[in-house]
Amino acid sequence: MIRVPKKDWFYSCCLFLLSVLLTVGCTGINSGSREVTSNRPTTPSSEITTATNERTDALHDRIKQISQAAQGRVGMTATVLESGESVSLNGNQRFPMQSVYKLPISMAVLNQVDQGNLKLDQKIRIEASDIVQGSQVLDENSQGKEFSLSELLQYKVSKSDNTACDVLLRLIGEPQRVTEYLSSLGINDIVVANTEKELAQDPAVQYRNSATPDAAVVLLRTLYEGRGLSKSSQALLLQWMTETQTGLKRIKGLLPEGTVVAHKTGTSSTVNGVTAATNDVGLVTLPSGQHLAIAVFISDSQATDVIREEVIAKVARAAWDEWSR
Image (cartoon, rainbow, N blue to C red; front, side):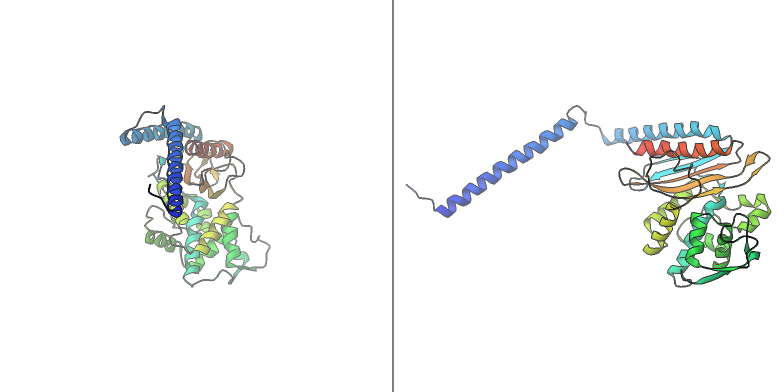
């Protein structure tokens, strides 16, 4: 009789037990998979694509139906940044941005900070002569006051302050510098051409400061990915956008409480019953942790303020429902 050494015998037993455990484990995993997929036929990849297109078409039709209530021209684009799933309505048409243009202006200013040309803590004096309608940093009775660059940026983004916007545009040179900055990032369908004071003097000028919904979503993707900005500047801007106090009934209006939305609104005055611009663009954090970049523009609308904001809210909710499944 051949005697197996005790050490070898013990090693063989361990190997045997390990193989049994792996076999049982794999069987359990495979069984679990069969429980999930046993009632589903194998679907070729082409059919999956078709199904996705059908869902997108249905979402597009839903958004188109919602948009009819605006009694004006509606453009929107929404994209899940991580997956690339997207829907668009008039996404390549130009719309007046109004204060949405404060987002690319802020990015251009922060880019100058990143390059060392400006500093967040540098002091900037604002005089009464600088005041533009819609100002919160100063009123017409003020004698002038100093603010830090960071404070003015926060006023401009979170409170959509027009005076802060013009002061910062003047600081970086001229509006066209912002368009040049955007072009350097490969964004060519957003035009920043005029100051807030110029917009207030002539309502027709607002149509020059224009963007397509597609380009606005590209801008949001650029911000999310941190291109053209340092990490610290990106974090600051997203924080201010999340703290935005305007347009709370637009993109955020029908989303679940607590949903994180970093956004920038834009609104024109109403002249002869027609509102040239009611807009909101932003980054929405989905339940999955993915991010929805969405831009909704309503132009030349005869609907009430309530209805216009409701249209934006319903469009955002339709996209949320589609990609929160």
